[in-house]
Image (cartoon, rainbow, N blue to C red; front, side, top):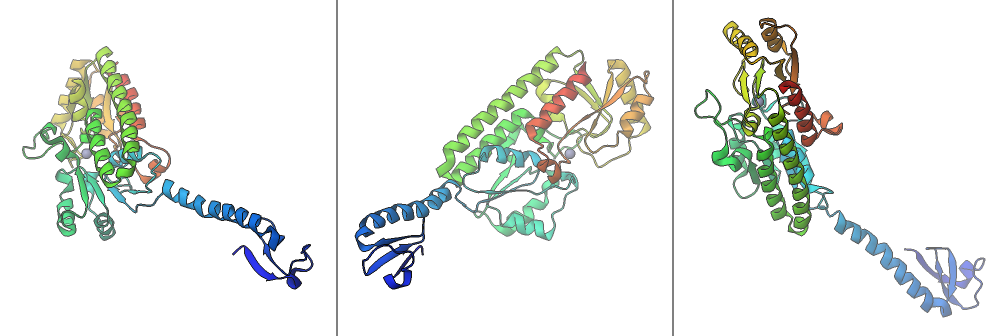
Length: 345
Ligand SMILES: [Zn+2]
């Protein structure tokens, strides 16, 4: 307490008043007040105390900790939530599950991951073949406790069939800017439901993010429209089916989707090298995390050695270090646009 009541005798050194009892105030300045000064002092103290007690209270309201936990499996989901939360006034805790560079096709959660997911209020995942482990967790947690967002469920009929796989959907749904708009809208809806107090803020953040997504989408359309070629050869896995579909790009790849295969047959190489010559393309594409070996072999077997390997980032190997270093979904999509423009011209 800043106020100490005492007799005159005990503060005789500092006290200039004659009154027998008074108040010594340490805060804000160590001044001694006699009983006649008490009314003014009390008023001043009241104001100061109110200020002291109200400031943190106001701060708490601005950065209230709702304790809401959000777990996103892959980087794009994580980044979208981050964009919609903006300044995150509700102090929601957002985590990225696949943050070590392992892609979703090879991921199996550890016991710690299971606990972290189970204690989330919102769980965002792709919901395809690679996420079969999610069913176990959802059964364990039980319905109603956790809000779940499955990207493939949101797309519904708009999800693309995986080539050569009749029951599976292509899981790389995040590589379409148009899909991203749909996902962000749903994420904002769920966040607003959990935290209605800040719903307006989430709506504003969503709105400005959707504008950026649609501006980039228009740039992609423009780039493809003005491009010399409308085709690409991938000497790699092919997670870009959604992107190719959005802009009407003809793509030929060594493997469909994200096949676990790593060696292409001679037949595949030969047919892609022939395709490269036939289309007259100057580049062969590879994806993030690839060693580019198949792409180089395709060039070696083609009619011109004067071709380059270009890398498109499928965001399947973004790490927590990349996140810390400032990687964003929009940044990567923008960088990919530059690569695409180079590949098509
Ligand atoms: Zn993949």
